[in-house]
Image (cartoon, rainbow, N blue to C red; front, side):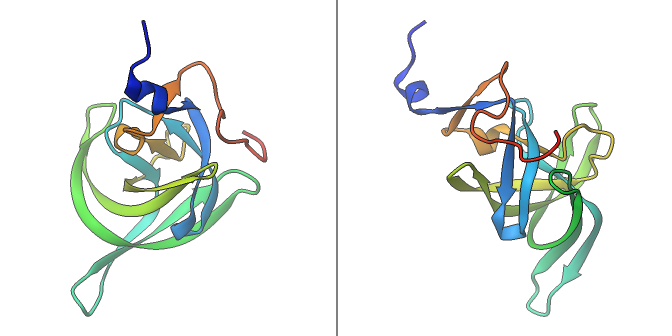
Length: 153
């Protein structure tokens, strides 16, 4: 099957990659690239909602970064909205949504991320199809095409 003009412009990434969220001070985050997930999801604990005097709502949360070395990072971000999301197990929950910049290799772009406790999951973050659209194609049999893990996977 011949490649379309659109697909020939897309970069190929693996089914898992290492990314950074520079605005949040998070580096070396292993993500699962998941075209089955509409929105990206980040493992977050101790989520708190903070009302500012100007009426804005911010969210404060803890992120565990598992690569080189394992550490917890306290993060604050503007709350975009709360959105009902159905998990892969079919359970719906109301999740906080933030906007931030993601970096993969030298590329940076804005994405929306839902915050959820992903303790039982193998990856601290899912990179969903909204973040991938118009940018990447996924190679399902390869990992770390655009990134190199620095520590233990």
